[in-house]
Amino acid sequence: MEVVIAPGPALARLAADAIEALLRHRPDAVLGLATGSSPLAVYDELARRHAEDGLSFADARAFMLDEYVGLPAGHPERYRNVIDREIASRVDFAPDAVQGPDGLAADLADACAQYERAIADAGGVDVQLLGIGTDGHVAFNEPGSSLASRTRIKTLTRQTREDNARFFDGDLDQVPTHCLTQGLATIMSARHLVLLATGRGKAEAVHQLVEGPVSAMWPATILQHHPHVTVLVDDAAASRL
Ligand code: GLP
Image (cartoon, rainbow, N blue to C red):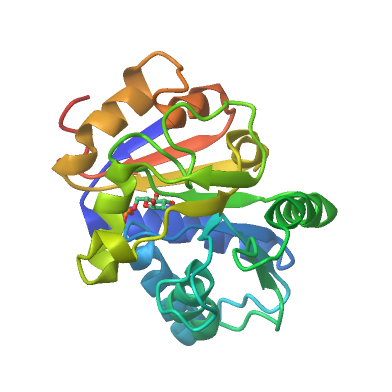
C-alpha cells in the first residue's frame, strides 16, 4: 500500500495521472468510477485534460461502484445522474460505455448478478477510484460487510445516511434506506485501487485503513490485502497516522 500525503489539488492530479497513464497506454481500458465529494476534483482534472490535452475516453468503458435503490430516474442525486453530470457528459465516452447497478430494477438481486457478469465480461476493472466513509465504508459496504462480498443489496447505516443528507437538502427522510453496491471482493478484483480522502472527518477511517487490523468492522481495511493500492490523503486525513 502506497500512502501519499499532499494538499488536495495535488492529490486530484495524482489520481488523474494514474487514469491518464492507463488510457494513453491502453485506450480501451476499464475504469471504476466513484461518487461522493472526494473524486470530484479528479473528475474536474480529467475533464480539463480531455478539453486541453486531448485525453480521450472514446474507447474506454467504466463501471460505477454503487447506486441508491428507488430514486426516480430523473433525481439529481441518483448516482447514475451524478456520474453523468460530474464526468461522463464532460468527456467523450461512447454511449452506454458507463454502466452502474440498476437501483430501479424490478428484481434487484438479478440486477446485482447481471452487474457482476458485466464487469467480468469487460475483463475486470483496471483502475478503480475510491472514497472512504467516516465509518470506513467503501462504496456502500458498511461496517460488518462480508470481506468476500459481491454486488448485492444493502441497508444504509444511519451514519452514512446522515453523512449523505447534505446532498438531500439536509433532510434525512429524503435519503434512501437501501442501495446496490459492488462487494468488497468485487472491488478487490480491480487491478489498481486509488483511494482519496481529505479532511479531519476521515482521519480515524484512514488510520484504520492503513494501520488497523483487517476487520469487517472497518471494511476498507481489506485493501491491505490488495497488491496495488494508492492511498491519497491530505494532512488532515493523515493526522492520525
Ligand atoms: C458515499 C459513497 C462512497 C463514498 C462515501 C464518502 O457513501 N457511496 O463511495 O466513498 O460516500 O463520500 P465523500 O467522498 O463525499 O466523503
